[in-house]
Length: 281
Image 1: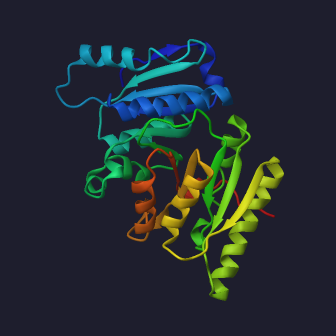
Image 2: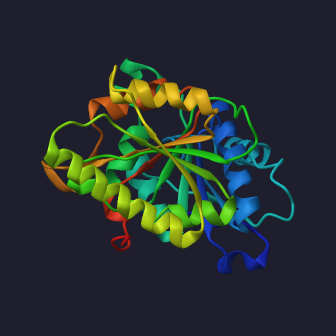
């Protein structure tokens, strides 16, 4: 690991937001969101560049300086250059830096074919840090309306460890979106997961509203429609443990579709193992 550029000696006392960059416009959009989060939550930023083999080191350093030049001077900033395989390196650095969030800019996730080759969608398979995918410029410079779909699968019941961090940054309205369910067993699981989530929101004093989709279309499509209706600032997707690899995670087809069609709405992807403890109502 190259010697990091470090700005502000108080950084070690603060929560950290990790921003990987390959100097694309989407990475600029991700940095903008990361700055919004960091400024409101008194967090620091860590910018990470993973060089390609044979990359011009001096040129990369100039690009890093240009990439970070608009980060406010009073925001603690650490800049790292770390060689390695992209997904594994980002996941490892996030743990080493004790990052609260990884904020990633990606163009490929918005394209069905691009998703197959997307490093972004490989990163979450390795990690235990929530990560936010940004595909387009932020339409609104805020994070006040968070759309949180509630699932009925057992594995996703407690994925709420990221909520206190967002509540520290903002006082968001959580839009709890529930699917249309008729089977008694699935309905019972759904209500249990809703109660767990509400238990945490109420302890935090967070605002929330419930929306039951009409069930006339696929859940992901109805979630996206609701995002547009309320001008959502972020939508949340929970992954599932990969049955083939207990230490890896996967996204269901409808979750991939939601990410693909999210457009200018950042997507927060949360893995089940991030749950610190079950939330009791």
